[in-house]
Length: 451
Ligand code: EPZ
Image (cartoon, rainbow, N blue to C red; front, side, top):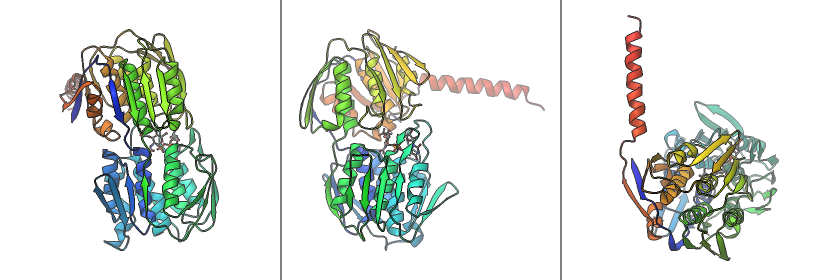
């Protein structure tokens, strides 16, 4: 267990390069299962989710090798034990949801997939019905066996299907079905498809491998199935969520930072909100310069599917709003239960109430350092941001979820002037208190148990 120790109060200042996008790299890695030649990806970030998916792919007989900035993936289903050619094991898939993206490619090329139901960050209910409905529409026979999805089909056939769910389209659901459809017989129309830039990036990678895809970035994607896919070289798009994290960190510390290699277009909704908060933003096609005001203004927004404000940015902007001079109102329509960071932000002195689906954040003059815990990737990053602005020392415990999506976030922030270091996690006072209470309860229960 590791923690970040942060001494708040340093303004961020300088220039920094944005890494490749985790959420674009992961489905692109799964796409390697579809080709009969090596897929070379550049810009794949060195984050633990990438390591986990690489382990899943190796299990499925994909050779994964990193040489400098190139991640090379080469699928060879003829190697190894036959039973393992289809099986994505539970101990790996349970760690991260994106590994469920191997389902579509496995099924399309190898005709059978056995994939454990996925894990991932706890953001509320996260079903996979849209993935399964989509693949069933392509002709797959799907059943659930002992916690695993078993999908089978001789050759998938093109169909009309929809990715529309209660909370909008599914991003990885669209990725799964899109990949499967590339090798289906005939044409597939995906209605209500996710329009996220990471899906567009995946589609571009698939096209380089030989897939025929139209309508990327719109809500109707058309895929004309081909007989086989080959290899390709693809540069993964820059990470819009990492970029937003660095911008919000700059704004909350009243700093001034230039991001290089930034996905400016994909960040429009976030840049508008930061402008509402009083930040001055200047852009070129691939740089963003942010200068913060002395006092942030309140912001009101609802996180929605692209092109709306991303749900992954919501916790970061909530942290920003804690220091805004007024009341901010924040809602999340993608993951309505994604507010686990609020309790931890309150430990730092934030004034936040949850009113139904909305968080009301009353800006305070100053946050104060405390011990907090990273409950998931973006919530953890939000706590780091709040710690950077807080007076005194903050310890963000259990930072493993942050490492799932950031390549040494602390090193990047240090280079910009933050006082932050990675340290071994100490026992948290709350945990100790909970353990003490549990011991007391157990003692009481033992005393009153029938003899
Ligand atoms: C992707 O998750 C991202 N992960 C998430 O980023 C991101 O928060 C999310 O999209 C929304 O933008 C990756 O790309 C690897 P969804 P995904 O399926 O695809 C409901 C991060 O921090 N739904 O688009 O798993 C679901 O419950 C991560 O980097 C169904 O109802 O999310 C949610 O309310 C966390 N049925 C909504 O749709 C389904 O079959 C959107 O989920 C699937 C989803």
